[in-house]
Image (cartoon, rainbow, N blue to C red; front, side, top):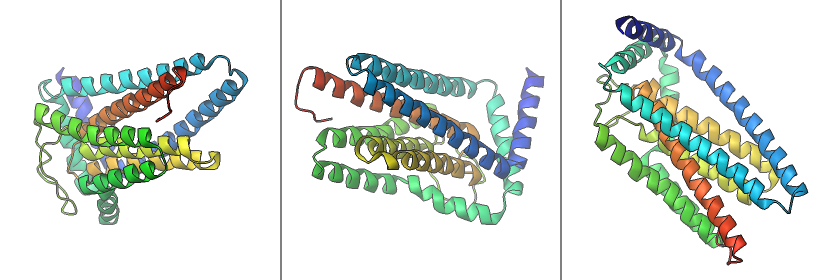
Length: 276
C-alpha cells in the first residue's frame, strides 16, 4: 500500500510538471471524442429517418446512452469520494500535483485561466440561467425553459449539498489571481460548466439549424474542460475536486437530458400538447 501511494505521488508530480502540455493533449482528445460522438449521433439520426415506425428503438438507444453516462459518472464520483478517507493517499497525491503546479505554470497562463474561470462563477451562471429561461419562454419553449432551470439551478443545489457532506478544505496556497471560499469537494465551477454549457449544446441540437450543431458541441466541450482545468491551475481546487465536479456534473446533465427526452416521448405518445 505504501509503495502504491508513493507511485501515485510520483505520477502526480510528473503530471504537475507537464501540466500545460497535458492540458492541450487532453483537450485535443476530448474534441476528437466529441467529433466521434457527433458522427455516431448523425448516423443514429439517419437510421431514425429510415425507421419512422420504430421510434421506441431510437428512444431506447438514447435512454441506454443516458443511463451509461449516469452510471459512469456516479461510479467515478463514488470512487473518488471513497479515496478521500483511504489513509489520505489521494490527498498526498493531490498536494504533490498542486505543489508542482506552483513552479511549472507561467504567470501568463495563470492570468488567462484566471479570466476564463469566471465563465462558471455563480453570478455568471445565474445570469445565464435567467436570460436563457426568458429567451426560451419568448420562443414558446416553456418546457425546455423549465428543463434548463432545473438543470442549472438543481446542479448548484446538488453541488452545495455535496460540499457540505464531504467538508474538504481547499488548497492552502491558492494563486493570487483567484479567490475562492467554502469547501472544496467537488468543484462547483467544474460541475457548473459541464451542466450549463452542456445544456446549451443540447438546446442548440434541439433548436438551431444543423450547421450549428457541431460548433455548439465543440464549444461546450472546450469551455467546460477549460473552466474545470482553470480551477486546478489556479490552485483553488485539488485535481480530485475537479474530476469529481466533472463526474457529478456529467451525471446530473445526463439525468436531466434523459428526463427531458423521456417526457417529450411520453407527451407525443399520449398526443398531449408538446411543451418539451
